[in-house]
Amino acid sequence: MDSDRDFAHVEKLVRAEENIYTVDKYQELMTKSQKKHKPIVIRMADKFVDIKALPAALGLRNSTLNTAGQKVAFRDRVRWIRVNKFGSYMYKESHSSDIEEPWKVVHLVSHKQSDDPCAQPPKPIMPDIRLISLPAYQHPIQQKKFADIQKQMEYIPESARGFYQSLSVTEVTKGMVQDDDISDMEQLE
Image (cartoon, rainbow, N blue to C red; front, side, top):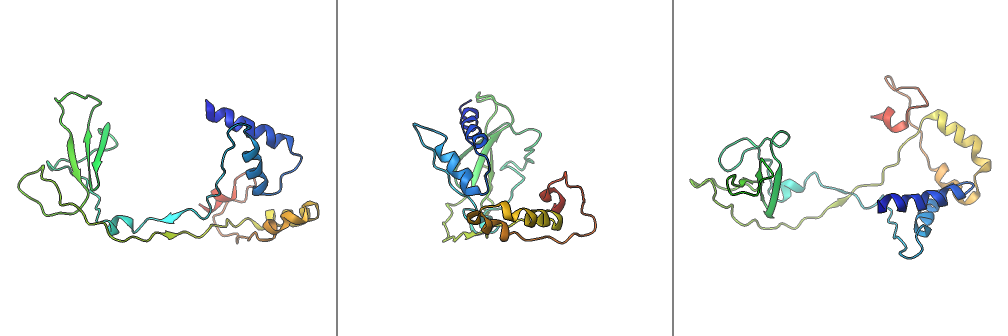
C-alpha cells in the first residue's frame, strides 16, 4: 500500500540518524522522506477542540427510535446509513438496494411530533457556536524515569534540553503498577 511505502521511507531516514532528541527532528525527517511530493507535517497538539457541548448547542438529541417507533439496533442490525441533511439519518438493515426494504428514518433534532411518522422536522436554525481549544496535554512520567533522564542530561544537546527539563513527575499512588515494561499511559488509565 502507498501508506506502508511512505512509512518505510520515514523509517529508513530514522534508522540513518545516530540520535534523535526531539519531536522536531522527527517532523523534519518526515518532511524530507519524499523527493517529488514533499509531505506537509502538521503538529496537532493545539488543533483539538472540546465538542462535549456541541450536540446541545445544535439542538441534537440521542434518538434510539426511528420514526416508526422501532428501536434502532446499531450494533446488531444496521448495515447501511445515509445522511442527506442535517438533523436526521436513514438506515437499512441490509446492503440491499432493492426497494423491498425501505429506508428507516431517525430524527436527531427535537421537534413537535405529528401524526405522520415520516414527517420532516422543521429546518434547524444554526446557532453561533464557538469551539474551545483544548490545552495541550503534558503527560507526567514516573519519578524513576525522570531520575534516569536527569542522569542522561549531560549527553543531550543543549538545544534539546528544554523539552526534557519541562517534563513533570507524577506521584505514585496506590493501585498503580510499578512494572517498567508497562507504559506510563497504561498505568494512569
